[in-house]
Length: 244
Image 1 (cartoon, rainbow, N blue to C red):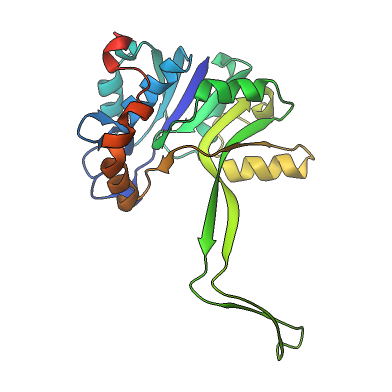
Image 2 (cartoon, one colour):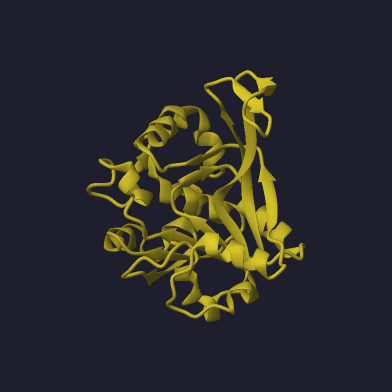
């Protein structure tokens, strides 16, 4: 099984932690970088090949990960001199990718079984399957319902919560879905989903209720470090030495 990890972003929201190192290499719990954790997880979940899409400070990622042998993986690289969006870097790789493969952000901490997720996609007719997570926004105010005139209150809710599903930054992809796009073009996840919907093709949702953190902001990074001592045994299903 093959995974493409998107690791080319500048990590501007995570500064100052990303001033000297790319976001995928920031340490969690002073033991492993985010990217190392992901690589160990992928190996434990049955993946054998990984392509790292690198850009900003990519030479540091290349020097750190190398050929992936110490993780029990075959790792190669694709360079992104200019930002191509979430899906754009993958377009140049299509001839070398299997029919079904994984795409994921390089700053995700989760105990999602990536292998089982990809296999579920392979059994479904969806052009792409998105790992989704339930979030909710709680209003700080009482919410009023008013009639069309705006002069009469017809309903009231005290600080309601609005639930919704968000993308976890993990996608199971079928190669044919991307054949319609030209290599080198900028292609974001949002554009891909809107194009599929406009064409009458329905992307799949794979709801997940386990542990998930998108390390995009300093407060998220602080949370990850605070929780590492209790979550390490979950996020590292095998000891790093087992990959040697």
